[in-house]
Length: 334
Image 1: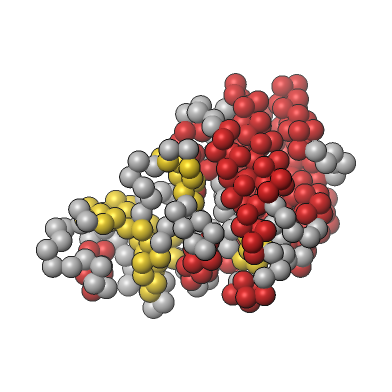
Image 2: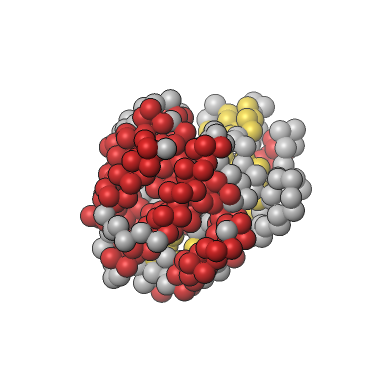
């Protein structure tokens, strides 16, 4: 079945999550995600997030997706619960027939960090905490055979991240195809730890100085450089959209990046940092010319973003402060 606002209560009653005595639930569709149907469902005693994986992304062109990625997300939540039981949703129900995952909802007082950032509130302590959490995840799962076996399938990651970002920009910029494909090989062959695949402000809820993380459909055992770069690329795009506060957003990248590498403890950490810079360049290009380009950038700023990304793909800079200073200077000089 395909869930909607009208049938979701019937579904939850059938699954015995709604019981006799519960009033009709309040059902709110969430977000503008193209890969899942997501609903917040509430009765007085409990609130849930109900998520159903789609087989085809809700975009104009044909984009087919493996619905089994929803089970990846469930496995990721259960692994993360071992390290951060209060920072992530709790799995309530896994429906392997209809590709549905039900979890507990975020704390009522929590707000999406993306909304705070776009409103100009840039909390650098949250950036630091995100780096610490990510560094801990990678360290705790590094070279773990059981985790590697559980997340050996990279198909969801390839469909949700490689194809729309890396493969697409390799088509748009054929002169960059060789280094972009080299990054793809790094991501798929140098597999060291559990990679979350979607750590960025829109998937981070903030509550009293702490964070609550959601959305792990692209989780896999892979190269940590992707997670490091994905978050940083998102913040760089925000710096470009909110140019008057660009320095603050870029400082958020510095703090997050340094917090991560202070926390992370696994072999080849230095190699991961170098690769993360090149992944950052690919993901910036992907945010401009990939399958789902970022909104809010005019053509002039898109041109600057392309120039920044292409330079970073070949840069010899290795300190994150030097990289963000290059971004800042390019945005200022135009």
